[in-house]
Image 1: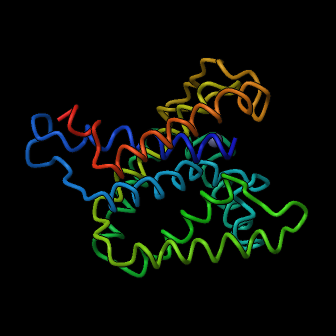
Image 2: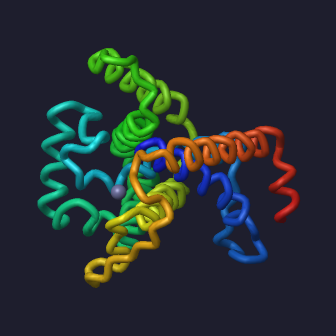
Image 3: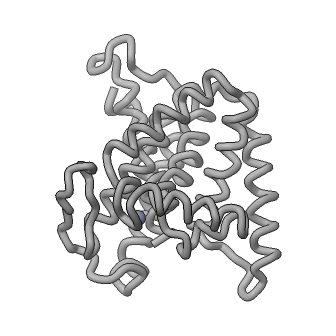
Length: 235
Ligand SMILES: [Zn+2]
């Protein structure tokens, strides 16, 4: 489901950004972001869309940094109680959002490292690999992630907590629509699932969900880049 998670994170952020900018609703807490910041937020949210699956040592994102990330995911899995436990909860989404915004505001280098990993996760999730060439695919993802960090190094990303939390929430929403669901209210052991997508990486996901999300992503990105008719409409 990597592709679905990355795309849904970006789409949910691009849809939510204009709402988070509404002063009538949020007063002085309303976000005021440039086009560059909204697009950077979409990149962050796409990566954050994969974050909850850090609890899956044999999953796709565990291979992002080879044995290092695999070992890290093994630890996360052990600490969080296994796949689709603590990291698949609202608490995790908000905690990650808070932690990332603290990094972005107070510890620049830490934020760049986190951003590198987030973008790496997003690229890994999208899975635009060179078929059968794991090493070159990994290298390509690392170079692209480093490029993204470079491109964003000057941007004020103090708002990063929003796209991170939204990316995680998109992931939870997606997993809740598949069998096994999520423990959204962890530590309360109440598994929530409404099975609309009967099989992960099945036909429904590949032929319906991914194309729809990709189209929504393109439309929303064009809206942002064109100065945003949508933005004016909701304000
Ligand atoms: Zn998951």
